[in-house]
Structures are given as C-alpha cells and as structure tokens.
Length: 172
Image 1 (tube, rainbow, N blue to C red):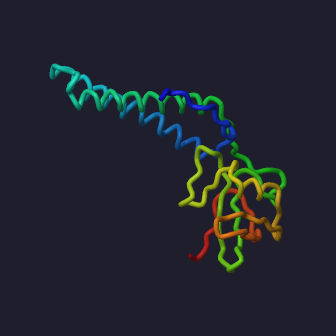
Image 2 (tube, rainbow, N blue to C red):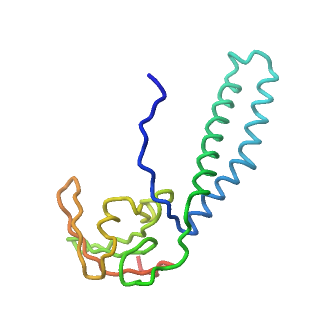
Image 3 (cartoon, rainbow, N blue to C red):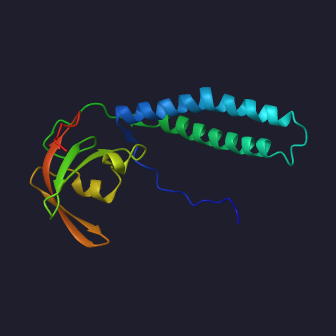
C-alpha cells in the first residue's frame, strides 16, 4: 500500500482573530518547547547505543516527524489565511463570524458561530463555514428557516437571532 493520498478540496481561507491566535500559539509551542524537548530525548536515547531496538529512540523519531509535519502545515496555513476581524456591513444577515441562535421543532434553542475550517469545535458551538448547516445559513436573516437533513430525517430550524462580536450572555 503506497503513501498516495488523493488531493483534498482546500478549506476556506478565513479565520477569526481568536482562531488565528490559537494556531499561532500552537506553532510557537511546538517549535519552541515541544520540539527541543523531543530532540533532547532522541539525543539521549541515541547515546544509549543500538538504535535498531531502542524503543525510546524509535518513538522519539516518530514524534519528531509528526511535530515537523504539523509545524510545516501551520506555517503554510498561517501564511495563506485571511483574518476576518471586522463585522460585515449588513449585520442583519448571516456571514462569517456570526453567532446564530436557532430554534428547532421541539422549541430548543441552539447557538452556533460560523468560523473557519481550522477552528471548528462542535462542543463550543463553532461550526465550519464549509459545513452544510453553515452553507444553508449564509445570507439568511432573522425569522428565516433552513432544513437540515439528519439521520432521523429532515429537521427544520428557525433563525431567532444573529449577532457579531462577543456572545450574548444567557441564563443556561
């Protein structure tokens, strides 16, 4: 089995300032802290002699490859990404960076933020702008509805609120 991987469609090149900072912090940590630690561990393992059966050496080299791969990816990605730090001129519609409150058929309120593909986090309500839900929401206004196809069937969602910037506080 070869190492060939079919080309993937590149993700959107937009990111929020918070997402950019997180990626930049990860790059800094990997390059300035993690890589020197792993390099030192590999150096110490190599000094023990036979490298062919030295688990610490083999594992350390594998870790270095993974760190280098991630560092290359982050540097390339950060160079080619656009930080969106201002809200759109029409804040009554859904665009990148918007917080959206949706009401489902059961009356439950769902809150999402549309972010770049590098920063999506479903646990915090961050959905990628490339996701089907975000694509369906783009350019919609309050009181519009969208239909999302789920394994349980079609689910209709109504837009209750749209806002930009810091999320509004809610009693949860």
